[in-house]
Length: 391
Image (cartoon, rainbow, N blue to C red; front, top):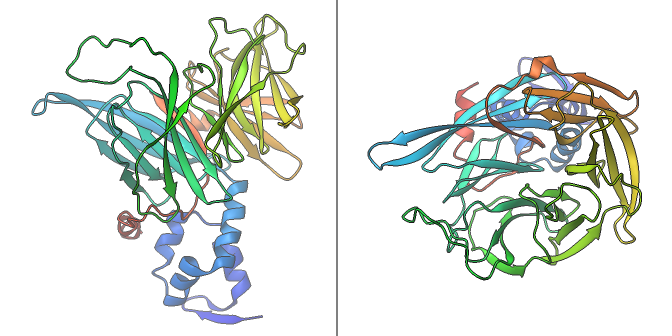
């Protein structure tokens, strides 16, 4: 076994050092690069260390909270935004890695995928790694769509992130026009921007054509190289709904049917989610205050399996499923956000217990989403110096 000397600790086996350091957050690891040249080399370049850190980070996803403070700039006579990011460790139930970014725009929403998050405002789009605090503006769109529907996905086979913006053709944001008119062509179309790990950010938005149908005004869900949205219909009932799928390897759309004949006609679909590496959806039955979680076990043959039924009483019915938090290979918890109460809930699949996480009370308007702590670079490295100065 290789042994190396670490000043202040003595002689430690290299494997033991890797085992210890791979359990630490990226922010702390960036600061520990200053300990010695060997530690800097290990943390920055050792492939075994990075692989082990990645595996452990996936077992402990973080919760990213984004709060928006809108300010009116009397010089430009426009609204601007201060976006306050907070990273939350859902296991230790602690807040850390707070930072703020200024955006010369308003109307912000945040969507996360794996290691990155995207901040979409009226006229600007930024991508961010919350762990390293890199924050980069994407190239502008031609004919910026107003109030688009967003999807953010990861294609592991090519190590690429793709941001998809869905909008109605002819419905364009224009700050100089008070009344926005929708043209005769109301087909939904999609523009995609590709982000390569390591940066730099370059390229342009690509029009991949029209969607097979209209979709709900909800962010898409990324699962195994595809992004999913629910189809739109006037009724919120589950019956007759479909799911629109975007294959990121081909940039092609398709549709998936909900389970036929197995859903209560009076129930309504609350939203899609990623669960244990599968696509899932939450179906709410108001008469018995129950939330059923279904998983798509076979996407080719459209085979759905009910994973669990959650008794929501007395939780507010309007909830959002944030994702799945693994405890071990056989057990885990579903993280549920109740905006009306500003409370987070854990549902343990094995024990069937629903409990509020009082320590993580999130006040005020905020976007919440899971992400994975990582060293993924956007090619700037500008924020790493600040992380070192915070040590």
